[in-house]
Image (cartoon, rainbow, N blue to C red; front, side, top):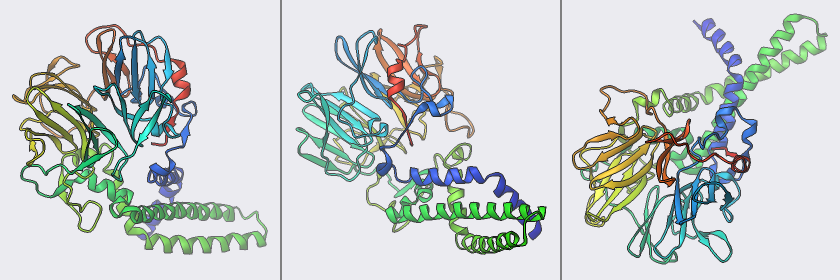
Length: 454
């Protein structure tokens, strides 16, 4: 049995050596997004699926019409100013920090005072018309990522992944922790739990360092194992001098010694890190997507905030005076300005665990909901869901399937020739109701928008 495991341990290690090393170093980089967000990669150096074609790869989240002949188109490409025919594009991202990752726009609004605001991964920004650039707005919270912005009368509501901020002047903010949902069980999503364990975030920066070190150990094991493998091949050929053979044998002894020591010491954390990582992507993701578990005590998850890293969208329905909050755990509402517990809608729309990318009202109690599950019209009162792309009623799958739908909706707009287009992550811009194609993606935008490490 030992010979069997030793044999396949060796060959699996050799075959997957490059893949393991790429996982290790890419994982370490991904663990430090804020520090390395200034680094870009030219898309021309990558395979075709990573290059922009027809506004794919989440190039566009939405558009914002600021005048009859001026439209801002935004998303992973940053912000570009164009005309009503989308024939000319001007970069409108001046003022954002260096790095395309810092120009990923989650939300834009134009306030009643004609102020332009942008919510990005790197924070909240206000456009300074005099200096013709974006200016960072100082916020009284640690987390920088802004996922949504809305306005209710003279008050702006700025949503982060964990908190709601309110302001009337962008200088003074009131930070609110949203009340818990009804029948709150103090649990969190299994996906989130596995995510923070895998990255080390579960113990903050200290945990990240531990996981980074484990990654380096994994790399060390891979390299030392490969060296032993190569040395043995060279020794078997018997064409080297005795002096060289001695050096190779000494090299093998040293590498095997430390390969085994580090391997046994780090075995548990390596198994834990590998296993948790397997559940963060399809196909295993489908089995944990909706599962909830207790918060692990004395960790980053063990917080009194029931919405820690859960908030994704907010909407105020003026017709019925209701706030709607979209979270990783579902859709909730408040009819009393968040004075009491949030109430979960009895009927939930289909939404991918990757997050909701489109959410807007289209009629009384009817909302357009887009995600990597597709694009749907959801009647929050009756529970009826209509597939807006396939033009048919939606029925919930009877069994667990893939965690994404047939259409990976990453954006939506009505600002091109008064027609409706959704942006599919793979296919790009697609007309929902007609054959008219969306504007051609200019080479200028392709050349000036590299890909981030994330």
